[in-house]
Length: 283
Image 1 (cartoon, helix red, strand yellow):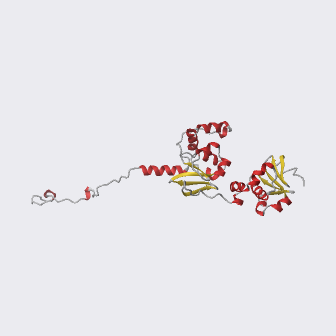
Image 2 (image 1 turned 180 degrees about the vertical axis):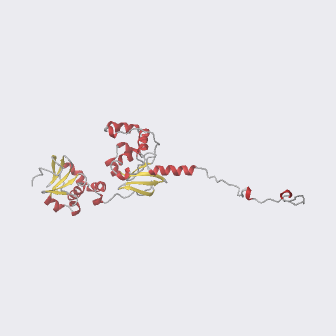
Image 3 (image 1 turned 90 degrees about the vertical axis):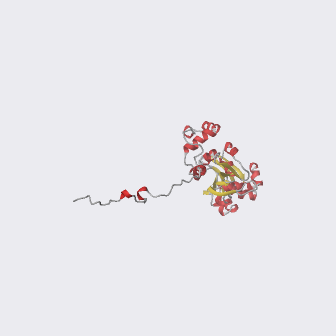
């Protein structure tokens, strides 16, 4: 069967055969893998087939879900294009990335795990592979490395601390990853309680990042400074600030003398307090 001449994604820009009956396609509205339908039913699992869209004699897997058929085809060794040799030699690399692109097939990322150099507590999941955690009693943002490699800028990656599968950011140094992740993850955007504080923190702490961002974005997407407190753009930051303020208050207890009001106090009667008839009063 010849390669597809039309697609569900609009006009075809490029279409390269990467294996027998397998095509890597880029079209106007999307890109991904396209397989001849009969062949796909022979080589792919039912779970993989459900992620595709059948149109005519072909099944289309978009650029996100194509990781699933690519993984199964790589394990079978049927991807023959030279540029895909690295994938064919190490299909498990796709499985790791698949936890981000297709968690319904590969499963979700494991939460941050304890290591000899990191002990985590109080995991608060924000999304698949994104958590608030505590390390050494300090709250931190944890982002899985696969997500970081896909979504975060070099500046955000360089701000990360710690080792292991998760990138770690202190609450005082998480403005860039929070700003970038909020664009793709509504669950992260919901954590932002003050856009003004986030913008001020970026302008105050990361002027080079703001300058680079504004240089490569339209005017409506620019970051502008505004009067607001720094590093109080997340609810967890507000909670921490409130706890610190309460802890810094002196533990003083006001003692007051427990006594009755003077008008209720009893006193010894005095001689002049009594009226003594002396016979001088006459009606």
